[in-house]
Image (cartoon, rainbow, N blue to C red; front, side, top):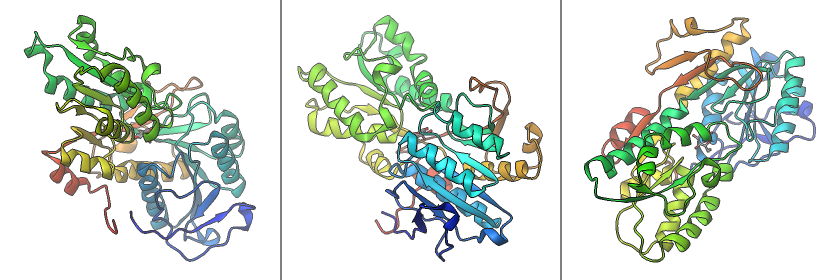
Length: 385
Ligand code: BGC
């Protein structure tokens, strides 16, 4: 695990935050909630203050994301305040309220529960604080200024194409394939588009009976995994294996929505699957353990969504908003980014407004291209492991 220096303190009073001299970023996995991590830029001499509220410190990607955002804002002389809610809705609401009280100029939020922040964000709106949804669209709030994310439907679509191409039902019309689905957290607005992207087209084979789902758990609701949690995915899958595969039925593929759920499924297969065929497993994020699984042949693919790029867009967008601009498609024109971003001003309705969105493109990673992709995106740091 990456060794870290954390600058944090229990927030009895946010106003009493002291500026300890430690690195603003370098959070560790497991950086606990109920703390606000304060960056190194002195708010008194800063260009502004930015509050960052992340859903979890136990899932690798959010720790990386917080790191990336803090680094960008620190370089631009912005004071940063980071809170990890550890999948507690109430804690995230409290975090946001504390950040508002702290007087941040902008809020960057990745929601634990997409639909639970309405009231907290009303407070942000009243205080004139712009809110950027980071990676996860927040529903039921007109206080949102922008949404920055990777295209989640495409994430699922890449997973489905891998499953379809590797099982190749079209060229094996006499063969029946057994597939299971492990979807993400139903409280996360990203989970359903990933599932929909993965299910489309495969549904054609499911309807024709060439792809079977022995557990029968194929709707989003039936296959969802609260908090995208590895242990929950593992225990559900142990159940599935014990009930539907212990008679020797062969499992061909598990369409896992991301790497944390894939890890749970792989652990369940390791202990409870007795057949000796390789099982195709999908994922997303490029978490360290999953890259290892891919190298070992236990997982077939993952999807990189380079966090530096997502943070870069969020950072530049936030600065533009703080400058009084109203960014739209033109905002992208003068960027010299070496990655693609699309502006979308019609797809992402959150129930209160259509949220202007900037979408990045996810990248497929398999054993074959992993080295190249790692050197290109280098998103996981394995130092001190
Ligand atoms: C993100 C995924 C991540 C999942 C669990 C989703 O909102 O888009 O990248 O794997 O949350 O953390």
